[in-house]
Image 1 (cartoon, one colour):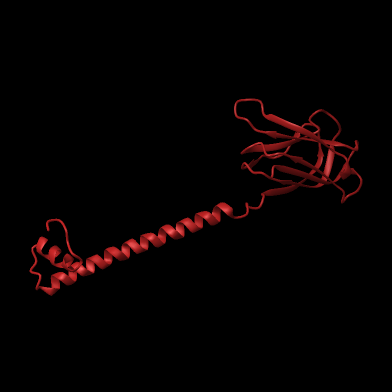
Image 2 (tube, rainbow, N blue to C red):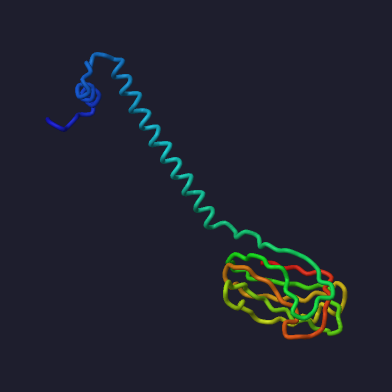
Length: 174
């Protein structure tokens, strides 16, 4: 039957097609070795696909990375003081700013989060009034802002006016 090979005739047909004498075992051994090598390569590819798929699934369902943060202090900063900038990737955690141990003429410090925008005015978000941090050197005030997408952020102290302020410790988490 043309084009149809019975299971026992596969090697003989391949040998005849390639011009080998089917009685020559060395050529049949080479063909058999190449067939096994091809099967091994297919198995290795399948294993690689399964491993890659498993790693991808684990990555999708793994816990989100820890939030990044930085800490500093402020000493007698005037109204309108701008913090250093930081890059925040888009995340569900948003931004949290905590002041500990505030001192100054007033008993409130207003903190506004801004997103730096190239060639346009920066975008300001809700202003938080920090008062609790003035009640003692270890007292804290915290402001929380929702996620506003990836970008460079900074905060401004008393951007609407007010008095100078010092902060023993501050932490920005994003």
